[in-house]
Amino acid sequence: MIKIAQYIISSPDVKDCPQSNLPEYAFIGRSNVGKSSLINMLCHNPKLAKTSQKPGKTLLINHFLVDNSWHLVDLPGYGYAQAGQKQRETLRRMIERYCLMREQLVCLFVLIDCRHEAQKIDLEFINWLGENGVPFAIVFTKGDKLGKVRLKENVEAYKTRLLEEWEELPPVFVTSSETGLGGEELTSYIEGLNETVKS
Image (tube, rainbow, N blue to C red):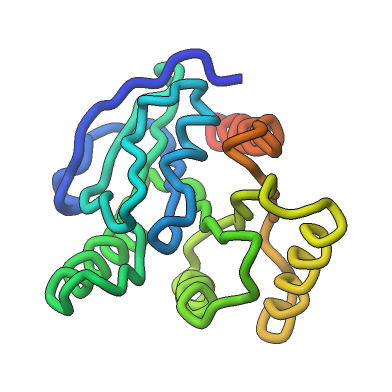
């Protein structure tokens, strides 16, 4: 259970991120996937990460200090169609540099809207993570928007699609920022990784 989370800094590039030895867990996904809402749910603070009805609002690497022991990182969303080519390229480079160069990164949580079938842009990003050895987990968001049967079907269909190219699946979580679904499982997973990092 997360007790305290506070905003630290927003950085335009990985080289500007905090000089810290604390483990980091970053959240990323396509624009409007519900990233900020999920972060706020996990941290029990509806105003921590800025949410917006307009996609593409997160344009920097945002660091939050959690329980004075690890950093939660809110990364820009990828694939924001209305951003210009130059801005999309800048964000892509920022995200890739962070993923590849940030030594403190323990796990990247890739957020997927559970209502949609596998999208090319998500699959390409997930495969890029695999090719570059970036540790990640998949987090399905907006689990409250579907009935239990449909939700399970969609998640299983996504796993099946991934197994066409992957020998084994990364950890998978199903969440809802509205109901709190999956929040405990996600924070427990992070706590477990923290213990592993310390030992």
